[in-house]
Amino acid sequence: MWQWFHRLGSPRWFYQTSGKWLPWLGGITFLLLIIGLVWGLGFAPRDAKQGNSFRIIYIHVPASFLALAGYYVMAIAGAVGLIWKMKLADMVMKSAAPLGAALTFVALVTGAIWGKPTWGTYWVWDARITSMLVLLFLYMGVMALQHSYTSVDAANRASAVLSLVGMVNIPIIYKSVDWWYTLHQPATIKFTEAPTMHPDMFHPLLVMIVGFYCFYALVLILNTRSEILHRERRSSWVKNVVLQNQR
Image (cartoon, rainbow, N blue to C red; front, side, top):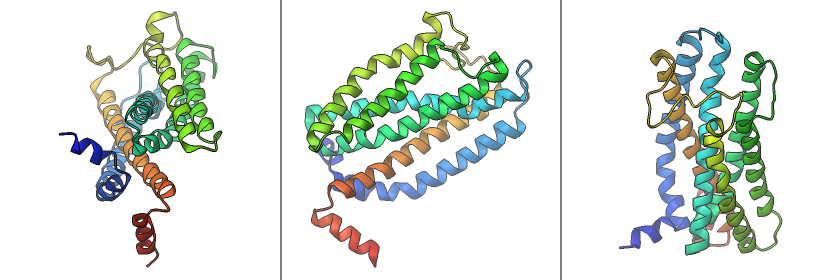
């Protein structure tokens, strides 16, 4: 009954199978992001208080969502690598770190740009912003650990431990606007409540969030495939792949 689980953990199986998904996933990602951007930036109504400056939400919010969700992906992959010793899980963990760091950086930069017209300053040591900065450092810590050991196994173990320890920061980010007095506005989208945004603003945002999730999956797969080829470069099947690509 666990055959599917071990097959999923096979780098060769993942590489061969994921290649079939990429054209479809790439097309869907491109379509969703184009529709969401044009809809949100060109056709969504102006905000009554913030004017057109609110439109950065169509980049800021999806990037923030994926920065947090991506950390779960990295930490879960690290846990699977620690417990079941699956090579593919370690590769996913390593591949997720730079992608998560980039999305966290985008979230921080777009938040700063949004904060200037809204708060009158680019940066305050707000609870949400500070905890997001900690998230960026955690991603960078995992990336640094991957290059700090000569042993791949030791690097994977250290990275997985840091990923799991850093999970404590995720609920802090989620609840920071509720637990502390903060300049950052409360969550606009909640699973237990209807969104506070007008539907004409919310619908393009929803398209952008789905598009960003597809983008994350696409880039993570590409990063993981590259990592598989690097780590498995001495195996016969990778040599065959390289030969086929050179023809």
